Every structure is written in structure tokens, then in C-alpha cells.
Image 1: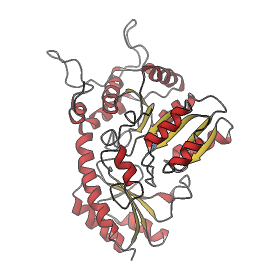
Image 2 (image 1 turned 180 degrees about the horizontal axis):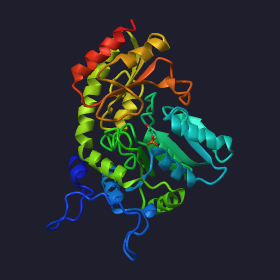
Image 3 (image 1 turned 90 degrees about the vertical axis):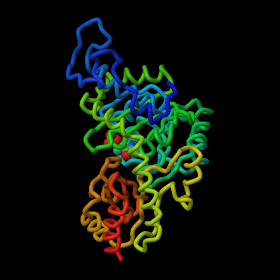
Image 4 (image 1 turned 180 degrees about the vertical axis):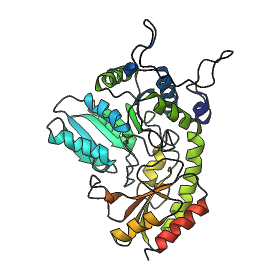
Length: 368
Ligand SMILES: *Cc1c(COP(=O)(O)O)cnc(C)c1O
């Protein structure tokens, strides 16, 4: 429709406007529908999830399909890749994504070339003969920035599909389909739903053909989402633009302050001019987002104690909710060995900036 994204987030995925029609698509708790209509069995699709898909598709500029989780969405894309094919995957990325690629490699299902996302030359070289490039930018949790246009060009030249995990940036900051990618993936569990109350994934494709192919795979992988989850995520989309604006403004301020704290040896955030990914990110995204990652001094125990001892920041995994969360990522055995023991991931939420800073400052000072 060509509306601004702030408007689209409000208007997309509504029932047809007519007298007496509801403002919102109802939660259709029905596993089956009367024969000979648009909907049949719920594993194939349902009207509540379709409303969410319409909205996220409009924001990303493509055709959306919701999945039971982000990982279910990843698996549907991997299902398209022929056995034995070469795929390019991030060396560092969301731990579940890395684990899945490594598993498929160990099983002999795929030949996986793992490349750091900020290595454009390495990506171009690895793309030779590949069927799929799976990108993530910025990466979780090292905040590496991938030059998406360059990777797309390398993939195109090989006839490879290019998919981008856009979970950290959201369509409010980065739209990979406009940069030439074929598929965008989200863990909608994070910013899209935005309230830490739903598990959900989504793929958005550049073409109807890819959408139809993936829709068939979703049916037979049994990866369709629940209607409560898609309804919550659509509600989340209504405030996604303003949540991102506020969280990002706070994140920018906190990132600046963190660069001056003696317990912090490095701040990883593409909104800092000193960040190695800042210029590439600025060429492809309209803002740095609200994930800030810091490398802290002190023992593992001291950093864990800091995370436990905060009162506003919630010590918890996951990200992208209204509440700010903090976590030492190396506490997970699936995390990359390249993630330093003292690396702490901050998901900046919507609380007041000085309240967040004072709380964090108390924790950081305990490391000195
Ligand atoms: C959480 C996350 C995923 C996995 O999504 P789920 O919804 O938990 O299955 C994938 N990629 C990124 C970047 C994530 O943060």
C-alpha cells in the first residue's frame, strides 16, 4: 500500500472494514473449517495467523509465513536444500542456529562452510558452489555485521538462495529483501512479539514461488504456529515502531556511558563510531537497534553475581522484550568458544534510562 512503516504497523492485518466488523481478527480456536472454503485444516493455515503474516509481510516487504518458533522457520529453509549440498553459515551466530548447522554437517546431510559474518571476502569465497547462504546481522551475541549486499551478490552469482536472520535489527531498522535477499527470518519470540510471552518464528520471502514451497514444507514438518502466539505477535507489531525507537535511544545512551566504565573492556554496538561494524551497518540499516554487548573484567563468578544482583535488569536469557534483560552468554555450553567468558549481553527495554544506568552502574562497580 506504500504507507510509512509506522502506519503499516497499525493498519495491516485488520478485518475488512464494514459496519459491525471487529477491529481485530478474532483468535480462531478451531482445528478445522467447514468444507469448500478458503481454510480447511489448521496445520495448513488459519485466519488469525494470516492476519499476523499480512502485517509482518507488509513491514518486511514480502510474503510471510509464521512458524512455531524461529528454529522451526530455520528448519523449513534447510529442508529446501538438497542432501549433500554446500551451505554457508555463520561461524558465530545464535547458538541454536550454529548447533543445527553443525548437527546437519555431522550427519552428512549438508556440507557446511562456517564463515564469520563480518568477513565479506571469506563469504564470497565460501559461496562457490553453495545452494544456500544463511546470514545473521548483527550476530547474536558478538554483534558482527555482515555486508548483506555483498553477500547477496556473491550468492546470486552462484545461484544460491540467500536468507537473513533479521531478529536483532527488526524490519524497523533493516529490510534484507530490499538489499536483495530471498528470505528473511525472525525469531518473532523476540522484538516482534516483544513481551516475552510467546514462542514464534516467521519467514518472509521475496517471491510467491518461495512462499508456496515453504508453505508446503510447513504443513509436512508440522511447524505451524499456535493462534494465541500469532495473535500476541500481531498485537506486538502494533507498538514495534515506538518500542524500537525508545529502546534504541536508551541503548545509544547506555552504550556511550559504558565505553567510559573501567570494568568494561569493550562495548560491541554498531551505533558507536568506534565499532568495527558501524559503517557497514549504517549502509544497510537505519539504526543500530537496542542490543548492547559488553566485555567485563572480573571472574566468571563475579560477573554472574553482578547479573544476579541487579534489581531492574532481569537476569534471564532471551531478548527483545519490554523489560531489559542481562546475561553472561558463555554460561551456555552451546555458545561459541569465541564468546569471551566475561561477555555480557544487554537487551535494552523500555524502562527509564537513568534507572537502568544506576542499576547497571552498581553492578559494574562491584567488579572493580
Ligand atoms: C532466539 C533466536 C533464534 C531462535 O528463535 P526461537 O524463536 O527461540 O526458536 C534465532 N535467531 C536469533 C538471532 C535469536 O535471537
